[in-house]
Length: 66
Image 1 (spheres, rainbow, N blue to C red):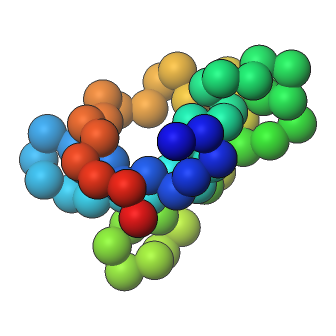
Image 2: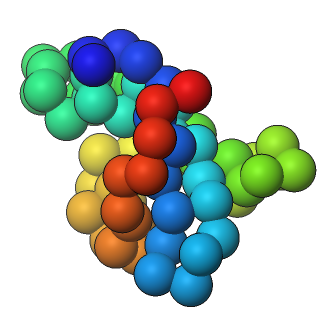
């Protein structure tokens, strides 16, 4: 589902939405220009991660597509 918004959750059950995360992973040529925006369930922005920071995110488990 490239370009789709995908819901992920951590091992502690906290849910996050990574916007366009799949397209960022697939197309490395655009990776530097874009960032993943991490939202909690209450839509609070937890972080905006550029290419270098995404590799350091906590392990996330895909649960469903929005």
